[in-house]
Length: 360
Image (cartoon, rainbow, N blue to C red; front, side, top):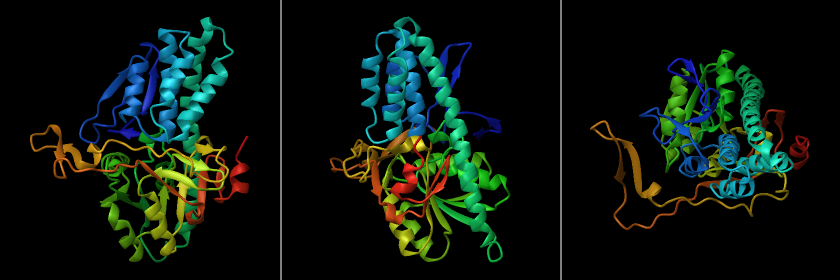
């Protein structure tokens, strides 16, 4: 990603220091702070506290967590796997990454596990960058086709997105935003309607920040404005990410995604989902009804974080003291509302046959 004109990643390993660094996403967009992950406890706190978030980034961070745990205690593989698995229950990339670590490291002699774990985490970091760039290329081809059919009657291609599926949700590039970055690089004049994405406001805080850093035209909207914009012809397509995708094409994403898909279907607007193949839950053959939907703290709903007039970050109460609040982190959108899935292996229909063809 571009930050102040320089190329940066959301997570990286500094060889000369033997340290893992992350961007603390809880402080964006008001403050850019780099944090060092020194041990497994730091990784657990970073994932559960959403200093890192986004399914692909959580997976890579967990792999580095295994390395840091083994660096402290080479015999701690099983306990580290269990502790990391408990941090975020919904995003499948966490489980995928931990299973990959378990499969590769279990047979490695204890005295070699630390080095092997580091190599694996570094490999997963590099793979994620390449995968996300490929998602962007495939998606940009699709957007170019759509733009060619509209360029004679409008000046911009208007895309509505939800939450943050950009570089900050991955090691670099992103998923849904990778498509937008690659499309813009091809000269397609994109404009992004950015859902604020209550209650944590990842759209307002993270997506707007990313798009501004990359010079992408965008407008922030309240979550409830999307349907109106679709009805009035201001949206050409919807483009979102996924935290878990079922074999039948259903997918799980940030709460509120389902409502946007319903509105898009009613307005006959294409609805695309961008994700890596590692986000597919190949055990979920009949959908995601059994998936655990994360419920987060009520305080995220009753309060809001932002920059105060003093220039300090702080929280403000939105509801009367003692108000009960429900805070589901995700919802499930059925495949019938999806136009196509965009992956690193191509654009596919939201059907079991098409999704199973991606397995390897």
